[in-house]
Amino acid sequence: AGAACICATGFLMPRKPACSAQVVDPHKASYGVDNALFAVAQIAQTTMRSELGKITLDKTFEEREALNSNIVQTINVASEPWGLQCLRYEIRDIAPPAGIVMAMELQAEAERRKRASILESEGVRQSKINVAEAQKQEVILASEASRQEAINHAAGEAEAIRQRAGA
Image 1: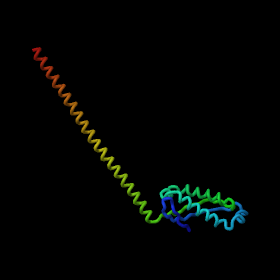
Image 2 (image 1 turned 180 degrees about the horizontal axis):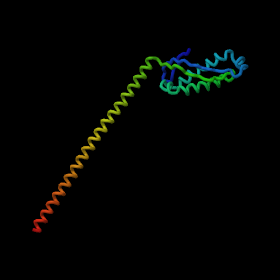
Image 3 (image 1 turned 60 degrees about the vertical axis):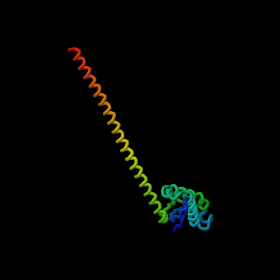
Image 4 (image 1 turned 135 degrees about the horizontal axis):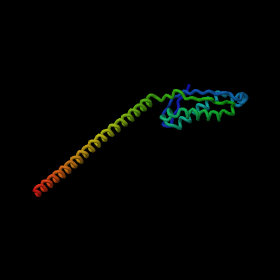
């Protein structure tokens, strides 16, 4: 059964590890330590607490494989004089307290709302830009139409003057 660990953010986390070790040197396992498997279990527990204490609660879930690997390496270094080798260490069932789970869920919900609010404001912004661009185009086209109308009117006046002068 696992005891609780404290992560870098200061939360107490119950956890249940699984460790599998193999005797690689029976002589060392028999004479190097009183109870080799108990010693490995103690090293594993201490190492796990140390590794979990270095990271935040959020990273605990993300870096489980790296944690397991670091713990195996540390156990193997410590247990080599005892003729043991750790084959695998697995942190199972990381279960933060209910209050922490609720806080994490609230934080995730707040992040979702924040992203939704940002997306909505960007949509409103883009909509206003589109309306402003349309109004700008409308003014430009109206101006070009007025200009062309003035040119056409002037050309018509000039033609009328020429025809009167020629008659």
